[in-house]
Amino acid sequence: MLRNRLLPALAASLFINTATMQQAEIQEPRYTVTSEARDATVSIVSPEYASAIEALREYSSDYLKAAKKRGYIIKDDKVIFLVHDIEHNTDVIDMNGDDQVMAASTIKLFAMSLYFDLVESGKLIYGWMDRDILRNMIEVSDNSAANTVIRNIGYGLGVPVESAPDAAHRMLMERHPEFKKTEIREFIPDKGKNNGRTYKNMTSARDLVEYYRMLWTRTLPYSDEMLKYLGLTKNTRIFTGGCDTSEEFNKTGTVYGQVSDSALVLIKRPNGEEYPYAIAAIVEDRTKTIDANRKKSYDRWVWERRIVIRDLSKRVYETFYKEHTGNDYVCKPVKKHVKKPVKKRR
Image (cartoon, rainbow, N blue to C red; front, side, top):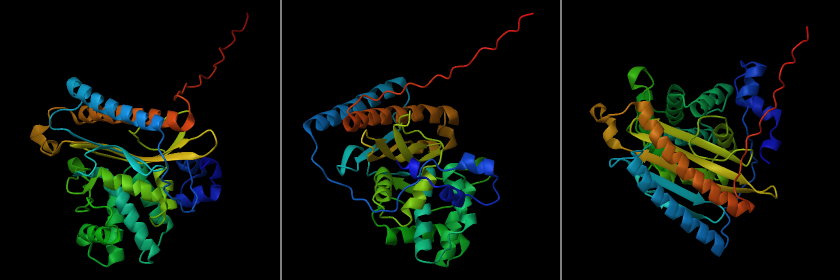
């Protein structure tokens, strides 16, 4: 198991040396990964599996119709939902997967990848301060940390600070043409009421899923390091089970107008092997970039769309879990027995 191979030295190297031992234990990555390359194996799909996938697609379509009736999604909402079976190298569900959408904080995935591209080429040094910045960018989605990473990319490319986003975008297109719809166009606002209101950076569910597939196959530079950060305990909307049935590596995105999560999910099989799949779920409404079109509170608007992402991804997880473990997914929380205080006799 990935978690069982975690070495204390790896955890210690991930955080700045000013953290206390107690803080380091709290922040310790849940998973580590091996550096060996992996192949996305194309295997024959059984009739039973094909039937389960067809049922999953029907469920997803019916669910969205019901969600519209309940008002969780409305006419201006576009639902983007892409699930890629890495083991069979095929898309299981593709709802608008190639459409370009606002990236929000998912752009941080591509910024991190570019940073490590420059480390590999010797133009940047992966030091202890960078580890802390990357951890903050991914674990708590810190926008100031993300802007620092983008500025560092500009520094590695030898351009002025104000030109860093455009330079990062050009580098992304040159080094990673597979990310066809992703655009790094601006720093993320990180101060005052505009904090987090980023609408110019773009991506697609296809690019997000491809990013995770490339991490799994170790075809991106420093894939292991990026997986460590993505495996940290943090906010998640994609359902990935409980009771130690899976491992997940994810990054959410949120702005008024876009709610998303994307992940690499590893389901644990009875034989100790892992079944990998990549998933991206996005609900976008570009009319909400204008304040006058925001009829609901930010928290309420996000919550309703978070429910849609959670429910759709849960059925995906349950389908894959049964197919690859032979059992229905069941997770019963263990109740801790609390001893009642004994009253002293007088």
